[in-house]
Length: 502
Image (cartoon, rainbow, N blue to C red; front, side, top):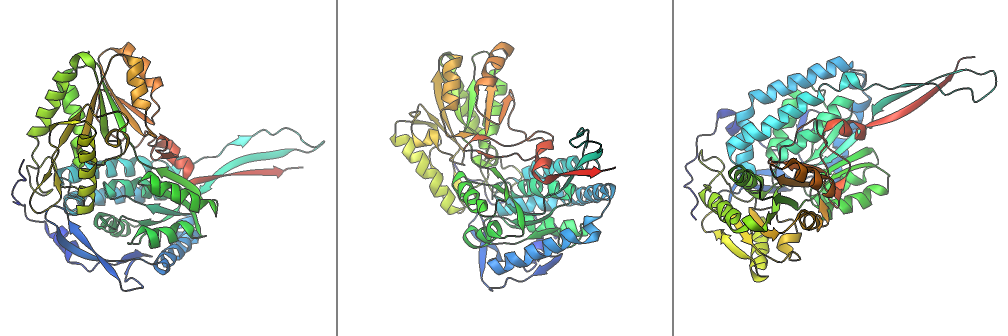
C-alpha cells in the first residue's frame, strides 16, 4: 500500500497566520512567554517536518495560570454574571468557532494527522454541539427546597439547597482529538461558572491554543480559560498537585490516570478520569452485513484508530466468520492513506514516530502469537508515520494485541458460537469504555446489552458521542462521566442551607 502524494491544498490565511505567530502560553487573556525559555517542536506527522516551536511549561507557569484562574473565579464580572448572560456568551463562542471551522480543521490535520474534513465537520461539529448543549445549563442550575420537619420543639425552619461552581478546574487533554476533548472540559466549566487551566498534549497543542484565543474574542472574561503547554512530568504534575485546583478532569491512558488519581488524593480533589478502552464489536449472523462492515470499518479506522472508543476487538458468529473477515479486509484495502490535508485521504498518519513504532510492536507480537494478517500488517515506507489498515484474524484471546489498547488502525477478529460466549469474550478485558452490537434481532440485542460491562453500547451504529449522553466507562476505563447532565454534577458543589425562622 502506498501513501498518496503530498498534494496539499493551500492553507487558508487564518491557519497560516496562527502557524506563523510566536507560540506562548495563554494566561489571563494574554499570550505569555514561558518562564524557563525552553521549548519543544511540534511535528507534522504526515511528513515528519517541524511545524512550530512551543514553550515548555514549568510549575511556575502553571502557578501563574492557576492564580489568574482563581482571580477570575472571584471577580464579580464572572462570579456574578447572570446565568442568561453566560448562556449568550457561550452561544457567541460557538458562533465564532463555527466561523473558524475550516481553520481549526486544518490545524487538526497538521497537528494530529486526521483528514481535514474530519477535523472541520466531525470534530468541530461535536465541539459546536457540545458548547451549544452546555449553553442551556446556566439557567437550569437550580437547588431544591426541603421540608426538614421540626427537629426542635417550637422551632420552624426554611431549608434549601443550591449549586455552586466547584472552583478552578485543571484539565489535561489527550493528543488524538484535542479540540473536541478540550471542549468537553471547557463547556461545563463555562456553564457552571468555574474557571479552567488546560494542559494540552505536548504532541498536539495548536487547536487548543487557538480555542482559548477565540474564547476571549467571544467575550469570555480574561482568566476564565487558560492554556499552559508542556509535559506531564512537570506541567501536568504541578497542575494536579496545586492546592488552588479543586477539580481535575483528565482524558488519556489508564496508567497516567491512576497516577493522577493517587496524586489528587493528597488534596482530595474532585476527579474525573476518562481512560483507555479496548472496545468489543459483536457481529451476529442476522446483521445487515453491508452496513455492519461499513460501520465496523469506520469504528476502527476512523482517525487512524486513534480513538478511545474504537471498536478494536471484533467477535463474529462462527457461521459468517470467513465472509465477514474478507468483507472487512476488502473495505480496509479500499481506504486511501495520505496526509490529512489531502482532499481524498481516508486514513492519515499516526501521530508520531514513537507511536507508529508502538503500534507496529503490537502487530508484530500479534502475528508471532498466531494471528493472521488478512490485510495490512506493515508500516508504510516514506516520510511520515503511516501504518496499513490491518485486520488480524484468530489471534489468541489472551494475547496483548487482543487485551491491550493499541490506538491504531488494527482490528482483531475472533469467532464465537452463542450469545453467552460473545458476552464473555466482550467482557474479558480490564477495560469497559464502549461496545458495539450489530444485529437485526431485537431479542438478541436486549439479551446482550445488560450482559456487557461498558459505559456505552452502540447498536447498529459506529461511535458517535452526543453531548446529552454521558461519556465514561466501567472498570479501568475511568471514574465519572463527561457530557450530559452527569458532567454538570462533577463541576458543581451542592450546598445545604437551613434558616431558623422563629
